[in-house]
Image (tube, rainbow, N blue to C red; front, side, top):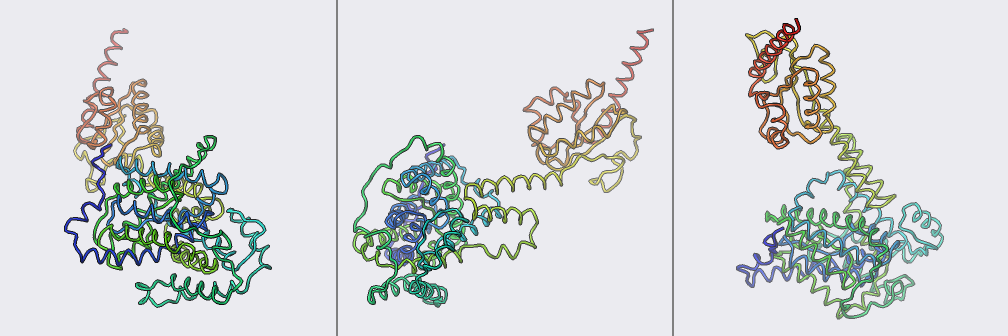
Length: 565
């Protein structure tokens, strides 16, 4: 681990920084701060914590992600990706354990960046990412139905089927006034002209209109204040979360899930920013910044945070130049907490539900469902499995099963394109002509070509080829020219084959061994055991050595017979 890896992008961005760039950052930061306000509150409520916790997260984590991250434009804060996992942790272990879990995830993220493991995130299959993103969107949408309709739930549960049952039971308690306000806000956000969206976000217009109407006419609708009490003006102080040693082991799994989700979403957001600006981010520094944010935020009551794609794109479109815009966004939200926090309590829950429902509709990868029959069946199976499991179980299970399923299906594909084939009298690389055109084929010598990856998924094919050769086998020549990699299982298969051949009085000869494979064979001392003369450069050399081995065997056999006489 090298601390020299730690170099926030903010430091480089401030070189040549002047009034024009500051103006762009101030404008973008203020706009994103306004956009982030309802989302920070909404995602906190959807996660089962207080609105204040969401605002604190947007302030602390948003500031630290911009100050220590690896992208010039990343905007951090609470996002929809964490809603199901946070709600599950709060329901099962309590808010205190959530803080511990968030801190643990932050440590993992920082170490991932410090050790250079950030690049490994790109190996998470696309169907897995799209599957849980769409599943999360469904969870958010369904979770907001009670507030959208003004229902009074007798009981609530983060479990899909229990939640749906509770919603159906509560339908008679629907508040028509809440429904009217919710629908009006929902339509307004969807239909708001795009040309106005940049300067006057639709979500803010909807929330302001609903709040003013509700306050002016004294409408009987649920608000943040009636549901959670007054939001205190000010910023919470530093405090240590309560640690329950009995649940620490149980929190490791959720912490890993939070860390992975944070890494995936933040890097996806950074990649989107790269495409919009042609300014590449620093992957490992971004993860270290995310780690710092998630380690510090819990001490002020914050929840998990990551880079937010929509807020980052808004930041760029409004003229951001550097991470200063993200810092301004955090300070803007801090100002709301210090000055106007009580006013936030008047926002109707139905209007807030509309904002989150539209967000869910826009974050879901619905086009993937239309492509199911046009993509490979394996990818469709992974996507649907992760999507369904995210909705009906939880994100930890969905991601775990999705990764295992994707890995197994990938192994199956590699096995299908890897093989051990007999070479009778021609070779594709020689244009179909015999590789030993002027030579006779020695009796008892068999030549096989291994194609693709020689690993645990294909090693058994070598055993099948060995049995295919039959009792007449004297020398087995393996051409490794087309082997792209070999693992411990493949190496063990070669060692086992060589031992069995030697015990039976036969020989193993290798030829056309690629450099990468040869390094593995040398490190394991297999070449020393086999004998360097048993590793030939070409098939012709291997056949010549096979003839030599057959001749030496014949001489020994004749000498043994003469000695016996």
